[in-house]
Structures are given as structure tokens and as C-alpha cells.
Length: 201
Image 1 (cartoon, helix red, strand yellow):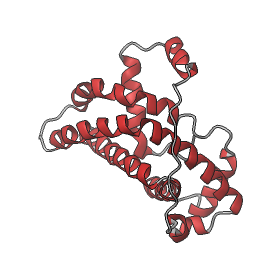
Image 2: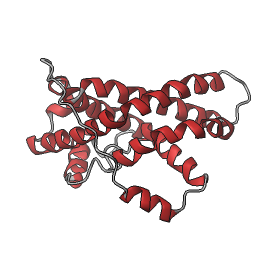
Image 3: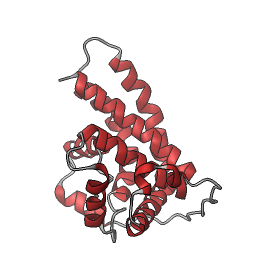
């Protein structure tokens, strides 16, 4: 899922890397991917009177087809957040203070900090496996082309990540504002993880 694969989601990728280093084999990962999660009842989120996608200047430039695809993709993401948001939020609440404390220390080994988080990271595995599938049935090529047209070919990668995340957050805010708040917490964790990795370079 290219649009959702922002560098701001480095925390998710890092968690899978660490879990795989902990003994997960390709075969066991494939089995986990193919294993169906118990389905939980997903309650319809009441629609808010204000649609955050209407005030976003980049979204205003999108075609109706692209907006429809983003609606479908965000709806899939909303389901993942509804089913696994509690575990994700618990993990972030545990991890953020640890990351911020590590950044305040002069000599911090990022790998040592990540090692301490390994146990907690298992809590977000189900969310990660669900989130990897949110683009199934979505026309990603069309969305990628739209992003290049709207944001430009030569845009700074950091600015591109920020703009794409604003678009994603707007669609999540439209379709599941409560779950969007959980996703924002996860993004905050991703930023802290990235800052810690940059400090260790």
C-alpha cells in the first residue's frame, strides 16, 4: 500500500523487523497472514456534520474517482482501527514515554531502546497484519498518479509524507473520527521512533 507507506509509519515497519528477528520465519509469517482473525462486530461511526476532506486544498484537486478510492481505503483502515485500536493505543501509551526519555539522554543506543519495546510491540502485530491489507481491491496506480499530479514530481520527500498524511487523516476523520485519534497517536509514535533513529546516526 504505497500511499499509506509513509516514512511516518516507520514504527510499523520497525516492529515487524524486530518481531521477525525474534524468531519469526517466512513460513510462520505466511501462516500468520493466512490465518483469519476472529471477526469483531464493527459499529457504524456516526457521521459528523463537518467533513474534514472538504477543507483540504490537496483533496480539492483530486478527481471524484480518486476520492472514492480513498474513501474505500480509509473505510478499510477504519475497520482495522476499530478492531485493534485498543491494543494499538495501549502499546503507544507504553512506548511514547520510554522514547521521549531516551531522547533526553546524551548517549542513547536506539537498538537498546527498541529491544526494550519488543515485548510491547507484539500487541500491535494484529493491527499491522490487518493494516497491510487495507489497499486490497483499491486502484493504487490511479492514486499514485493523482498524488504525483497534485503534489508534483519534485516535491521534497518529507513534505510529500506530511501532505499525504494530512490527506489520509482527513479521510479517516471523515469516516471514523474516533479511530482517527488513535491513528494520530500511532503517527506521533512513528515520529518519535524516527527522531530516535536519527539521533543514533
